[in-house]
Amino acid sequence: MAAASAQGPSEWDEDPAWSRPDPMTAEEREAWLDRLCQLDDDPCDGPQEYWDPESCAPPPGQDELTEQELAGAAAAAADEMLALDAASTGRRGPGQAGSGRVFPGESVSRAAGFGAGMAWDVTPGCAQLAVAAGAAAGGGGPGDCFGGVADHELAGLVCAWDRVEAHAAARKLAAVAEVFRRNPADGFEPEPGRMPAVVPGFTRDQLACALGESRAAADWLLTVAWHLATRLGATLGALADGEITRGKAELIVRLTHYLSDEEAKAVEAAIVGRAGRLTPGGLRSALARAVLEAAPETAKERRRSAARFARVERWAEDSGNAALMGRELPPDEVLACDQRICWWAGELRKAGLEGGMDELRARAYLDLLLGKDSRPRPGPDGTAAPAAGGSTASGSTSSGSTASGSSGSTGAGQGAGDRASSDSADRASAGGNSAGGDRTGGSSGGGAQQPPGVHGHSR
Image (cartoon, rainbow, N blue to C red; front, side):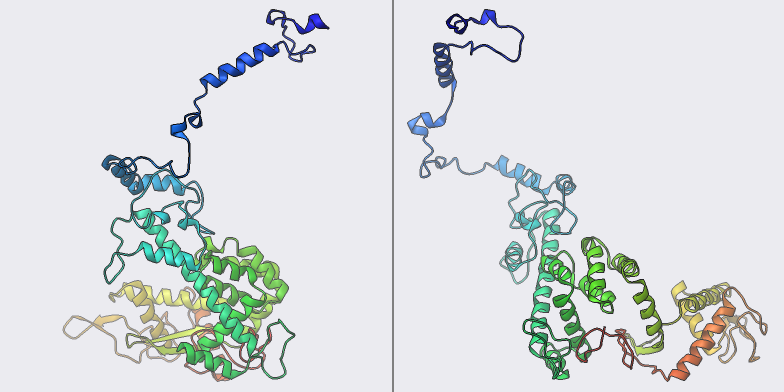
């Protein structure tokens, strides 16, 4: 065994699993370690280079960037392709498109921390983010100044303020929910720590007075706060982090308020993770599909109950003109009416009436309702002039003619449109609907399914 321990390197073989003792002797190992120490360039070995916290700063004059280095950093920060490359590597903050990683390059602007992938760019909405964003848009003047801020940094600032705005809305709704909690209606006092289902009317009035809002707006604010605080907690969390806007949160509440707690949570779980990346229209469609999947029977019942509140609303536009709109109408008849309006607008265009398609459709809408014909006709001097009012859309004065010009005949979508107009008129006259209504879509009356609010409607 003593001879085996003294084998030299010349006796090694190709066997990777050595069954013999280490071929390196103790003297050889010590020599190898001494050689490594001689080759090692450890700065701690030199007393003058010892990394003491008080002596590690570079000498004066060497702690500033040169003009070339500053120019290179500014070029890197302003390089849009570099920012684009960084943005393609991850996500810009919670639920937002953009970068979530730090990319090479330095910026000398006040908004450097909001560049693609930088620290403030991926920070959820909070009060600290608002302070940092406010400091990045300084300048010493009466307004904000963004001089020297690169494009990708400016985009980061916009996204940061968007998250701050959503976070502030979430905190406001949490405070409104506390107002709801502290003012239960008589006979509806909940268990400790629970939210009441009904609050008295003066709570709505007080909130409307404090915010300078209408009673309807205060009632809706209380309703949204109640739903977010009781059964849509994930939506409230996404709003507080800035993943979704207040408008999207209210849309989720609006399309789930008539569902049960379990159904609403199922819809929320299916949509809240991607709500921040969807447009409002895309979110509305996704919510409608999720509701049909989670509660198909409830969705059908809601459509039937809402049809009982079909109505025509009118109001004054800000320009001084007026608006007229039908609500909760049968979809097939609305489609037939729309086709008939398009058909008559095409006839007006063929006759030479000037205007864009929107203007012609509006004119056709009024023609079909009032029995008028706005097609221009040659005047006595040969110039085109509109027809006199009072005639039908076909130009005939016979009371039984249709838009095609002959009694009982129909065009593309006309017959269905005639039935839609007459049926809608019958329903409006029988139901006694008011011409002026609440444009927010709210309605009152027995049997309506409304969210819990000031008057405590059942879901």
